[in-house]
Length: 454
Image (cartoon, rainbow, N blue to C red; front, top):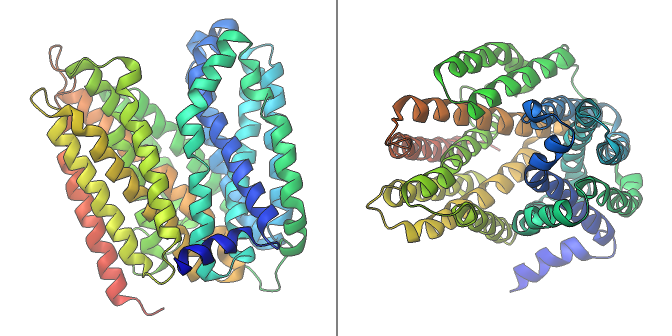
């Protein structure tokens, strides 16, 4: 009980409570925008007569977010997180206002670029601020709060966006958030002024980051196209994306990441690998429930909501564990995700006990909750002051690339095995492969924990 109370007081003591409130508010708003757009987008493209542009608001956002992530990391190391953070929030807010006023799809896409840039810079700058505001033993609680900020948008964001779109206008999905971004900014400003200045520790000179950021953005776009359009031609687009992004990885990720070297490299790699496993399995849950078990669109999406709740529970649990070795926590996250995916393989077939699926996905979400927060905690602990921006950005880039590449590859596999009478025939074999990947990920983390020297 004392540990729980101490972790909560770390967030809400007089010196930090306005920062904690601002942190939760701005992340909640970013999450609402992300969750609500999918609901409103069919109406948006119909009103703007841009049905053939349907996927582009997502695509340009992802590309801009990748670039913003790299910019945010670089500037946070060079100048401190204050300037990037205080520029990111107005940029995101302007993007919301421009989107609300958009007379055509091109203006909307410009708005989405602004939102992506602002959001990408914002996340990295907040990571660096957490590293400065909270001592190491309190960072699990801070990242638990950051994760919990996604739960309410996940539960009610699509409902609110649908209500506004139907009874008012889709423009309020964007415009309604802008004043709240201003409030979040005001809550953050006092702490940012105190802790956000440039540190005395020099950051390493890294040449080529802007070009590498563009390469990463192009690769993410190509991989997401492959994920959204699973077919043999899209496989070649995805492979082209890998070719484009490969040279960027050397510059954007810590040395040794792809070799899973112990310490910082394996933590960054595990973030992307785990995200790829989880979201690849999740991508085919609604489709399979609809096709095989004849769920309605609403009920087919329920396991995803339950998974979000599990994610929050996992994040809050790890926030109360101050003395755990984080490599072991992330390894446990891999095993929980693997258990959940194995449950999908059991419940998704026509003969499977599909009523258990939500329980399995709650467990998988819990694994993500403990692991994602723990990777952030450990990466900050392993990062010198002048490299926290770069390494925090590397976590986000790894997450993006892991999701895009594995979801895209999974889509191609499922599409290749599909038939007219069994369109989801490839889902269970894919899930079994993902389970093996989760076990391998856990073994990598255990090896790292046993061999770590810091």
